[in-house]
Structures are given as C-alpha cells and as structure tokens.
Image (cartoon, rainbow, N blue to C red; front, top):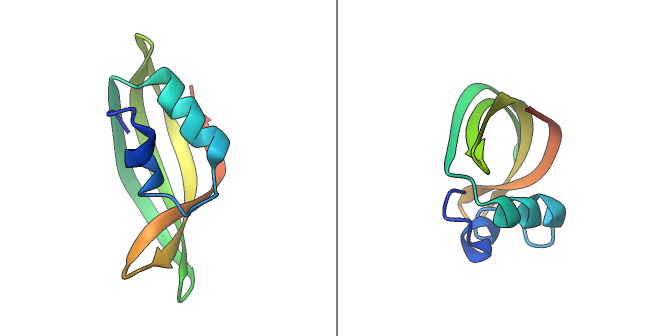
Length: 89
C-alpha cells in the first residue's frame, strides 16, 4: 500500500472490485500503513472475513482504527474482494 502504485494494489484485489478504495490509496500515497490481524472467520471454503487494526500516516496525518475485510480464495492464495467496515480516522 505504501508504494502507492495502482498495479501493486490491483495484484492483491479481485479484478474489478474496490475501484474507489484503490483510487483513494493511489491519490493519498500513505507514508505508513500497518495492518494487524485481530480475528478471522471462514465464511465458506473460499470466503473469509478478517478483522484488522490499521495504523496509517497519510498526507502527514496519523490515523488509526479498525476494518473488516472480505477475502476470497483466488489462484491458490487470497485476494481482497470487499470491505464491510472501515473506521480509520
């Protein structure tokens, strides 16, 4: 995320999903982005909900909070497919 490069972000996200999120990250190019997994819940064999804590520094401002990310199994790994909750301020 800290690279701010669209191609780096898109490689970790299901194609066509979260376009506004990617554009926002590319536009702000965070200086710091630390994600800590708090809890995971397997929703089915190919879908997982992940509660995370995020500490970021964007545009010189420190921000922190929590998010619930939805990951889907893709090509032997996991990719971000949705964001259910994002409360980073």
